[in-house]
Length: 377
Image 1 (cartoon, rainbow, N blue to C red):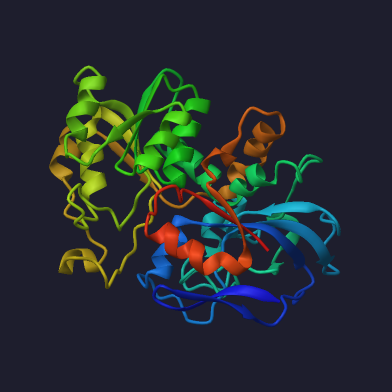
Image 2 (cartoon, rainbow, N blue to C red):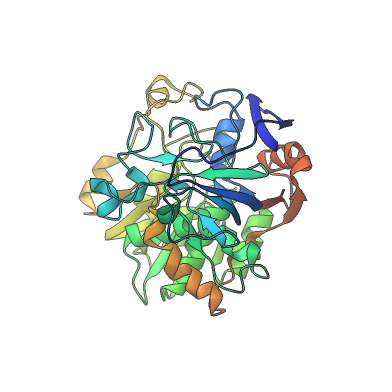
């Protein structure tokens, strides 16, 4: 089968690799029909993780079931399914509590597994023609009858829509509240969109890419361009000097200041400054315990010069971590099915798998208009 394979920093290629196959009785084999390039893929693409060469990338996957193992009962051949990026067993202590992003049964040194992701197990990614799905009955979200016509919406359930929603859940967004989102990439846009779905009265998205800011406005948010460095003051002005009720961090450890210098702590400290006293912050941007490419000795160790004094003095709360996709994907699928949500508005390009290397390059370069890429194997 054809697959996008990581061969080194900023180097990927379409290669012929051994076909994915059923390996265990509870496996499901899926023919991939849509697979997204995620901002988290760029961390690996840029060589900022321990991603092994030869691995197949891709953790945002949707397709058609073509084979099931003898232990699979619920999922049937022909079902169209969306696959949470988290690989979960469904029966460990964490999965039983709904914390599927931290499964204890996956073949990883730390809790949690994912397709085609560094240090999250050996699972192959889905930027390929076929994907093996372990614990298939648990991990496959069987989609309704409109799955084909709304494929570009449903594929967002693999990661960015639930992850954006998770940011608002971590922050505890309630109807009538004001929300500031740092980062106008796909996850940040989904956080802004989710805040609106949850009834926020005012949503602001901070970024400096014009195409992303335009999409933020399309999502019903106020676009805040931070390229001049005055974004915190503008947020305070828009919230009567108090700051937003809730904040969402959707950038992560490769955050940059307005001058283009990498400052991993910048969005966290800006959130403390632009969220009100007693407000809450949800952090879904990726932060790593080690980053050899970080700008300082401290940040290379995964530590941030965080403004804890102001955070403490303002009595704020922070909740963090990757989304437990299965906690949200069925309800979010219902919103899509009943035409209450259309997350595909973030998509800028649909391309065949053979153009994957070009897509990665343009997405990584933040080329104008490259906001979200869906590959169609």
